[in-house]
Amino acid sequence: MIYIYRDHKLCETDSLLSAAGLAGWKHPVVSAAGAGGKTTLLLHLAREYADRGPGAVVTTTTHILKEDLPWFLTEPSEDGLKERLQQWGQAWIGIPAAGGRLGSVPESFFSKIYSLGVPVLIEADGARMLPLKCPGDKEPVIPAETTHVLSVYGLDAVGRPIGEICFRPERAAQLLNKEITEPVAAEDIGRLAASAEAGRKGCPAHAVYTVVLNKADDPQRKEMAACIGAFLEQRGVTRIIVTSFRRPEETT
Image (tube, rainbow, N blue to C red):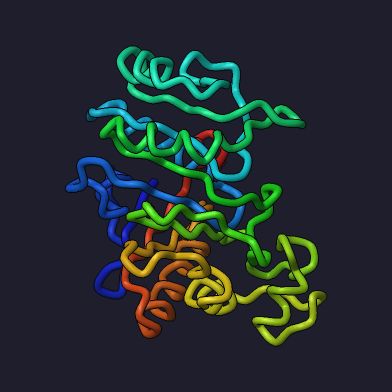
């Protein structure tokens, strides 16, 4: 389920592209950073682009999990991208790396990806699947060509100790003025998302910045998301998406 935070409430929509403000863009470059859930988010965006046209290329500036699917490409081939876009409506590309992952293609190949004239979706950092992330000195790796930044947070972080659920917990604790043993509050997610040292770090000045609050899997978390949305609006963050990608059978 997908919601937009608007007019002090969550408004449901059936389009992630619309929620992210991408529907009117012919070939945006979208960089996703932050907590675990980025790959799933890009997967849903890629599917919607494939269904509606013109398709999309998904890649990474760091690492992304490799899957045994026909639209994955493990070498920098412009023809390979075109073939997969034509046949599948999406092409995922990276260079084989350790742990069943794909690493970034050479920097010089990104210009060839952009020249295809289709949306480009980029996973711009890693979080080891944890629901909260505070970036390191060299993170995230967001290309200058980026038009939209999606900053991802897991609502399941709330109420749990910073040290257990956050990637780089010491940085997060310092920014939040907390001990790493203290639990994360809903407001803490808002504070990180609005911070130039956390969620907004590396976001190009011209890019549209969107906060994605993921795992809104029950009414309590949806209410929590609305509170975070109100907190963010007061701090100038006006584009907020709330998502739950859990399958219906998993909610029972």
